[in-house]
Image (cartoon, rainbow, N blue to C red; front, side, top):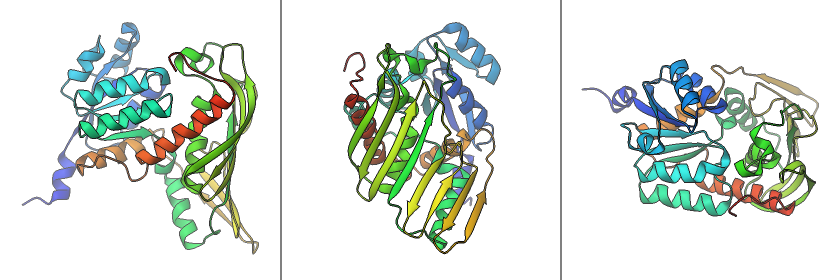
Length: 332
């Protein structure tokens, strides 16, 4: 008689994608490294792009409407559209009985995310925000190392990234799409701060808002249950994307780009230094997808890594940062 583990390994998770853009392409590439999955369907607003995506990744069912995707014979939907439509698409998928992995940020604000999580509970479906860093080999090894050779309780996090190379047509430049550096780059920084420092309490914010109505530079200092963070995002300057975790016995530098972590340096109070180097494969989206599929096979409805409480905390932090600068999106 086969073991439960063997039966789980045989369960194929059938995926559909909403939004055939850059993130969806990286997701599809990563699926090749995930055991027991198949990409069965894709839908996008632009029929030509949808057909091209289906041809590129051998997706058998490119759909013309979201209703077709929601009704398809699939298990889960990866929502990879712009943030302005995340909540609506998640609700549609959950109501159709599909499990949902939603690209970050999973909603424009806390109110929308609360509705999505309520729907996931009501329909008994798994919902997870797609936050990839904690599943990378380097991040996992760093956690293990700090348990064995600690720097003490982390009390300060510094992280940020500004990218002035993005063209004027890039979605982050448009308020109607839920753009801005805080929403496009900030979710990673919000995750890192909450992951190491705990519950978000309050923020102090400085920044600039451009003519398009989105933040072009933001510095937000945040207080948490176990410490403080200094975070920055930007669209009109250029900065490196490393991160710092500081404790009483030492500090960690996660080298750029820290959200696709490969290398970390740990410097200790007593003078010794540890270098960690852990490359990733298949673009990195594969690790969070594999985690999501494992949860499904275990019949779980919430990730212990990217919990609903963590996602809510991220939403509160991002909303506090952008509203402090006067950034509001259509319909809010």
